[in-house]
Image (cartoon, rainbow, N blue to C red; front, side, top):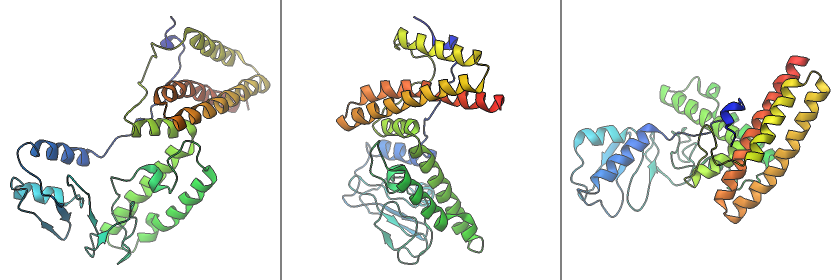
Length: 276
């Protein structure tokens, strides 16, 4: 069976990383839960002070001080957020601004990109609506709007604006959107050679890459590009159907194919740019 290393195809990595601070705190709480009993309600951390229920007795002062800076609530039953400026409870997710004082808030670690962009969690989303939401959010969150505000507001606007950018870029294209949906379900596509790939599929990739390398005109390259568009369109429909049915393994296999064809499509664009 052919190895993809011989094809010279660069795999696109769409692995998205969680906040290191958030993961560290979650790991800490997981370990602590084996040694202590958490309260039935919630443990609330705020930049304006810390409230501790006595049910969580092993929470020392240094840990409280560190965790409170995250302005996040952790509990076995619920998670609550409070405005860093006025301390009012924030119920909506995600929360870009406090509804009480209208101050910009730090990013909500709980919110998926679909929630941030106000989209249904579906593969076949409306990209025009996605773009409209993106422009609306950036108009209100862009750091230029906070140049005369406090340093904390400027910092949070930068974080929120960058998060919106990342969410938009991830959901805009079918490949990154599908990979993200797999990630939300605890799955991913490994980097490097796909040892389980169909040999015929690998042969097809090799032939397409060879044809592209040998193309000497815009017409030849454009023809390969048009073929890639058709393949990607067909794969998009198949992936949508698989995800809709909950067939995640099938969707994963199709996304792996889409990754390779999308890479060839990018190479076609580079080829055409060079020929022009």
